[in-house]
Length: 106
Image (tube, rainbow, N blue to C red; front, side, top):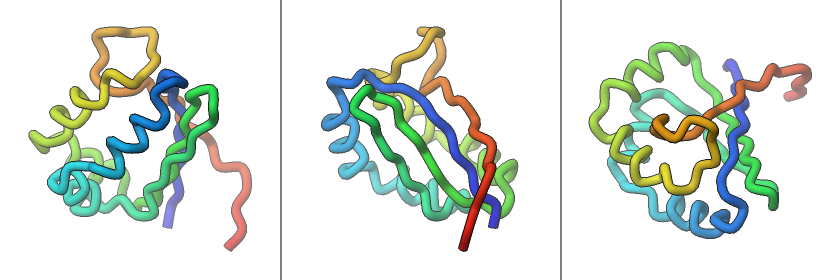
């Protein structure tokens, strides 16, 4: 199954609150992630607010079509928007940097 990684930034002082928001993720958002086919979705944090997101997906284009057609995702991103560090304040959600896989071992 294809693997994906992205990095983005949150305000360093908000890491605990960001983690709490995910522990209390809305059930409809959690369901959407699963229904959209995302597997092994994991987010790691550095103390400087850099986040690394990892997931696996069989058809990422289709998964994002499902996510983007939902009314839940923009509400979740608006709720979470307070955490993100970004250069474009009009952007809803984080500014991601896609990472290229360079090695993997099962």
